[in-house]
Amino acid sequence: MKDEKVRDIHERIYQFVIAVLKYIRKLPKTPENLIIIGQLARSATSMGANDQEADGTHTKRDFISKYTIVRKETKESAYWLRALSDLNPNFAEEGLRLMGEAIEIAKIVSTIIYKTSNK
Image 1 (tube, rainbow, N blue to C red):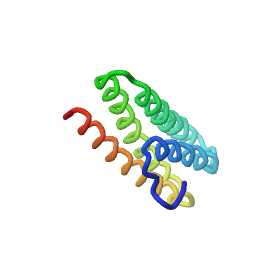
Image 2 (image 1 turned 135 degrees about the vertical axis):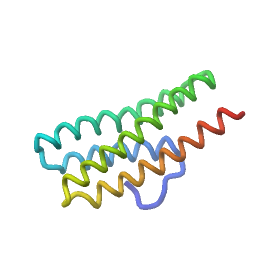
Image 3 (image 1 turned 90 degrees about the vertical axis):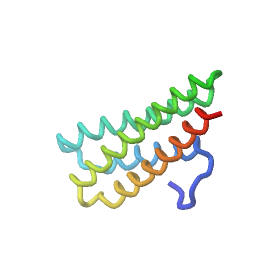
């Protein structure tokens, strides 16, 4: 992921998804890691897919629904990143950095949902 913060939420989510997928390639393929890696890959890629679906919606209700899923999947991704960081101390720094980015994205998405709901 780039050092400077990406202002466009769609690009920021995309860059996060790519960074997560690159991160999980590096992890040891232990039995417990494989389970969590699968969960993380699904939740992170779901973030991106639902973000793109939200961008193409025609109603406010559908937009909010898709972004609610993005927020849920982002929080789940943060959880799996924390677990992987605790299980893999040699990869913890990168995992915790990604977890921090997930938390920031979740806050931004929450703000988008709130502002859209109150329009």
